[in-house]
Amino acid sequence: MDGQLDSTALELVFHQPSPDGHFEEPQATYLAEISKLRPIVALAFAPKAAGTYLRAAVACAIDGQLVRTVHAQGGRDAQFYLPTLVAYYHGGITSRTMVTHVHMQALPGNRHLIEALSLKPVIMLRPVPDMLASFLDMLMADETARLEGLNCTVPDDFLSMSNEARADYVIDIFAPWYASYFATWRAFVDDKPDQVLVTHYREFVNRPGMTLQSILEHSGVPQSRRQCERALDMAWSDRSSLRYNKGVSGRGETYFTLEQRKRIRRILSHYGNISIWLDELC
Image 1 (cartoon, rainbow, N blue to C red):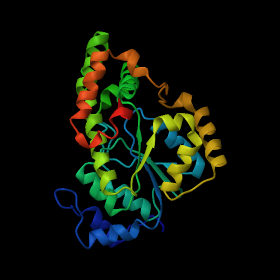
Image 2 (cartoon, helix red, strand yellow; image 1 turned 180 degrees about the horizontal axis):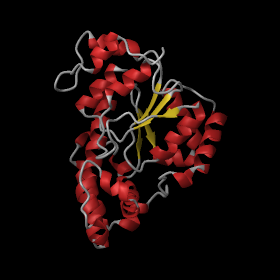
Image 3 (cartoon, helix red, strand yellow; image 1 turned 120 degrees about the vertical axis):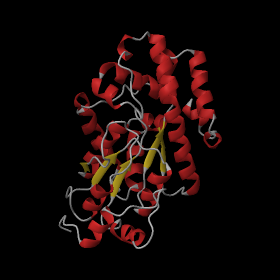
């Protein structure tokens, strides 16, 4: 593998899948073959679910390389950029193992590509009110975050809104995205339970080394518990340069009223398939 794309790879890059993202033959067979060449650690976390911290720890643990695998960050409702993945499998992009962190729903187009490449994504369950509280803090502090939004446009007058209006905006606009995110991944887990690893924020806080070790084993790059704990320490030491959230459980109770939290739960409850996760998400 030298990073050079052969004629088949080039044809694949310019080949359009079916409208729903499904790959027909011979492209499907080719993708299945190249996916065996190199592992990828794919964190498909929702925003503010410890993904930034864990991606850094993963890279430290396996000497991996964080790679942007989407066309653009703006908007954040991401889809993989196929040329980047094809180039990586052929030895390009980086000589190290790719680590990618994508705020991605498991919508049909994404699922078809994930399945075609036998990727093994990882998600994390964390209470949505807590994630919305962290997201609200980020929007207040970071102009780039306001420009990126979350599959939406953040109003120009966001900073001048009242606290109540900002909280209502975050619930009305962002909570539905989180609800759809978890519903799509729940469906994927139900269909392919061995392909998606579901981690839990509470367990991560209490046993971070165990969580990281399970992620690496699931991704095909296992490491010892000691190596995982060392990597977590190294990643934490670099927290000042990254957008780590505060990691405090129960923040949603101080940011949102009881009525607002009930609204969040109602939004999530529109998707019956996540009822099994509902108490953990609320």
